[in-house]
Length: 440
Image (cartoon, rainbow, N blue to C red; front, side, top):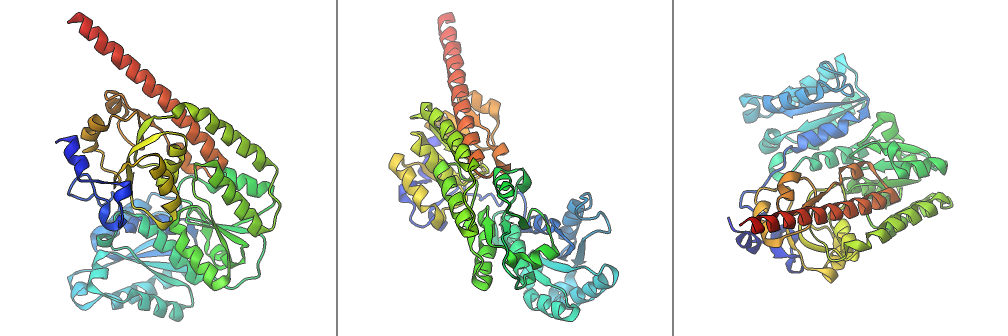
């Protein structure tokens, strides 16, 4: 396989007019993601104490999810909060509404859950049972919140839509409440929010945290979520719920993702404390100065070429930040380009015009490395294999549990360290090749 041929299939950033059609993979076969949305829904409901998940699907789907949840203390083991309605050929032909209702009655008699998420998988979605209507009917009958979550994999690339749909469905539980000075955190996926800089800043400012979706809360927390002064959305998956809450309850939201640029982080903090009506804590000044000092030390990165892969950060925000440091993006792997990425896309275009491809297929990248000759690779790859090509990995996983200026500081330090490693790799490689030439 030829690297030039692979690159010829891709468009450069300046050529992307329709992200849905113009962003191609490096192979004709598309990578569907290692997990389906069913897993995403399970990840979300796991953190909601008092809520049950009822899977409606084939025995394979039921077994897969029960096997995943049976070893988790959060789910309660074998007789825990994950139950199934396993459908057969008869249900496929005549529908599975009656079987679901019978199973629900049994669940209510045995467990008396506070809320139930009915998660439909591929087959129920194909045969067309109206589970939104079923969930509404069961909710009225049993006087508890019942939410339908649709997790058909044939329309999704990975498990993230399942997380998004589950937390968005939680909106049905929310009730009008008097406003207080608390915040909800929506979209936390990796690590504990309590371990982040953002949490420490809120705690020190006397701002309590209410519901956390999907990282952990109770059914009662969700019922009271509309009492919060502001929603902090820390990932795109939280935006649909935040928009619903703003429309229904007037709750404002601040988008506070894992930004890498200190300017973006400062703006997020300013917007948050403006909504809270609380003065900006003095410690934020010191945190910002530390981050800016780390970025200033990254002046040595001018001209360093890189390939961007799968990291915890916002793809185009991180690449745009690196472009402002003078680094050269050669190839960006992404899930897509959102409207919110437009400013960062323009920052990248001002510095370079990288190729754009779909994320998470490292096999054909081996041929592209030889063609582009990057110094850095950001994301998951085999370090030793890259070292042989003179490339160093920028390790980013630890940033997954961070929010705030700590992200910028960490990221800048990782970029500097990896660049030094790349220089050492290439110096050793050149010395080895020179020695080999002298021997010949």
